[in-house]
Length: 164
Ligand code: THU
Image (cartoon, rainbow, N blue to C red; front, side):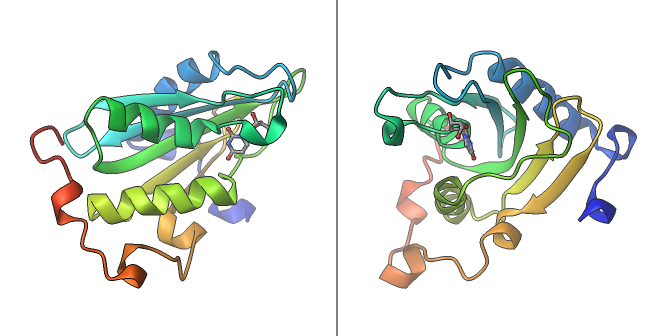
């Protein structure tokens, strides 16, 4: 996989900005159990940035990941159409050496967002130090995904065209 990783100077400006926003959000992770920090930042189709951070629970399975937190935050703000999402992570005492990819549940939810958006959302994954990046579209991380089409559902009405 290493050959697919990029360096900071190989990134586009919006990708760098998105990673910076995710890094700020990562500081707000509520993580008393795992002490693992995850920050996410979404770029809407009209270029607004909306962030998320992981939020844990004493009942561990109730925990919400940063990626899903960002999507729910965006929805609450009226945004459902996205072009890209940046994700950055950090351990309690150790840095992540390589980019961290989203968990399966988050991939499924990002796929839903991609179906609303009509965009194969780009994921910009960063290690803690912002020195190594992996850039993949959601369709690459979740091939043959189950989605609204499998249920014969058309999401046109759900785009909230008034905002994004
Ligand atoms: N976590 C995320 O926020 N995103 C992922 O895709 C993987 C895991 C969080 C959940 C939990 O708070 C911590 O990382 C350890 O699993």
